[in-house]
Amino acid sequence: MTPDEIELMERYIYQVTKRLPQSQRKEAAMELRELISDMAESESVEEALTKLGAPDKFAEQYGDHARHLIGGEYYDTYVWFLKVVLICTAASLLGVSLIDGIAGLVSGDNLISLGGTGEIILNLLYSIGITVGKCVIACVAAFGAVTAVFAILERHSIKLDIKDKKEWSINDLRNGPAAQKEEWTPKSLTPVPDKASLISRGESIVGIVFIVIFSVLLILAPHFFSVFFNIDGTLITVPVFNLERWGIILPLLLAWLGISLCDEILHLALGRYCRTVMLSSIICGILNIVLSFVILKIFPIWNPGFAEEIAMYADIGPQWLSQLAAHWNGNLASSILFLIICFATLLEIGTAIYKTVKYGMDK
Image (cartoon, rainbow, N blue to C red; front, side):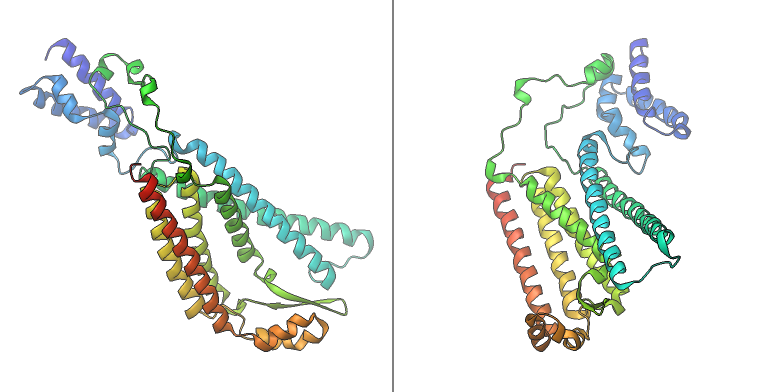
């Protein structure tokens, strides 16, 4: 090899090895020198390097995964979305804590008896401490969930912005880093998408906010979904859900909500109907229908004594409670809710397929 070819080979080796962990660099450099030298016996170094491909892509062969969790392509969207989720999580948790605090004052539960001002201060500090602790745990969980979703997008190269990529050439090594930067030209501008193909960002955000708030309530305050009675200063609750089997029901509900959250994240990230959105809508929709059937038709999600407990206190409540207690049928409620979920899910899938085929199949 000529001095110029050796320099070109070393540039390539450097570009590959700098993307590898320190422990792999020496061995990888030796393997690459041997490989390029063997290839250069029958062709030029330039042809050999062209066959090996771009250094960043070649470096991926030495590892099982990319060397970053959230890459630059996803980072800005990830940070923006993380802020939305954390704000929703904290706000919903504060709302739940406020409701719990009011309920505790009404019923007299969870109060530490010291008497006078000391009792008020201590109970206030106790409530603040519990709220802050729950808020930290919930926000950490939300952070982990959002990070995991975007890490999956990164790992499987699901593009948030579809654009043409400049093909790598050997001149990128010759001319240095400056040549590796794509020069912008008007020809690189992508077509303006049809307005009908765009996904409403507001609708996606509303869906995400609802899912986050509902999840927080299910995890931290399932008793919030109850009928409340105030009898002689004592707060009586009749839960709608079967809290005795909550340890089994809650994971299924969270899985259902988690699938919906992933679908909404993808809708928000991509912002328009395309093959990825269509496939996500179909897969997530089918999984949600299956989970809905399991939750509503197999597991006893409703409180089995709901009607009887309501009837006990119906005389002190509004008239509609008496009607509800008399006509409540858990199986019928499950069937109606399941049909509503199926209709809404199939409608969403149909919309995604129609708009993708009409506006987004070329994306």
